[in-house]
Image (cartoon, rainbow, N blue to C red; front, side, top):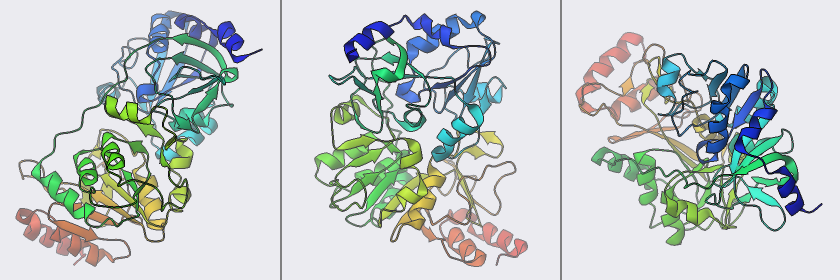
Length: 428
């Protein structure tokens, strides 16, 4: 039977996905652009036929009634909060599983035991392979292990790497052409530019980059146009990388692994980015338990990781996912790359944040994290903390030295108070 025969025999209506959802089924849903809109619509519409179905997803980009708890037969389980499910979580309508991104496939295998994966894919090629498009993440890790029911989208770019799904691995598919979800870049201020300049000047030629989400990481990339032979091994590929490729800055020729290739597990940005990754053998999408594995990351001898946080205490603990007990997101890949970069022979990890709130009334450098705050990057692996006032090099430093260096990059209005608090704690 040819792959065309298989495609013809497995084509279904979106509603057919309900036939694969028995009582208590655990369904893994693709993240961001991997979310199969028509299939999830069909699951919501047919919720009355279901019982105790849980839908597991890393990053939801679309607000949905089932996420808000409107269907008692369905429960959303999140691994990273977004604007689409943050309010639902705080209202108790959905669940959040703590994790580092690299561990999500293992969590799914050991604790969830998925019954079905639903995700969006590209149109099959002449060999019968569909790619997961601008995504790989945890769904790619489950190829060949869990049945897939997929949504073929003509707008999904065909990409390369470990995100290839053969038609023989699917139990059903439906067609649903829709535009890719585009995410505009965040607004950039003077503090962001100052922080980015401090980081960019410390990145050498030939370095391999991981850059996270936010205004400062975006500006770091913008500040690297004069560099040479940079490589990319990242969790998220954003639009800023495209400029550096087209300028000849990113070549990957000095990488130790995946030489000459941009390696990522996800791409989120504008249509220009999606056009760039489409049919581009220079970009490879791999499962997150590969891209975010600290031992894999550390094989790059000049690994540089840049990620943002919300608050840092005198020990160097970084709270990047909550303001006190008010959860906003999750750990993502920040701890994975922070550890991998400091394990790298000449690598460094940079955690960036504004020194204070926008109105300068609250310091983001604090003696202790606010009660209930979740530690994302913990004290033993934190390397460099950067505000608009400078770089605090913390790795391998004593608590007293960490405290002094963090106070030096705090907003000047808070330095005297922070010094007094450090003395009362016995840190100085």
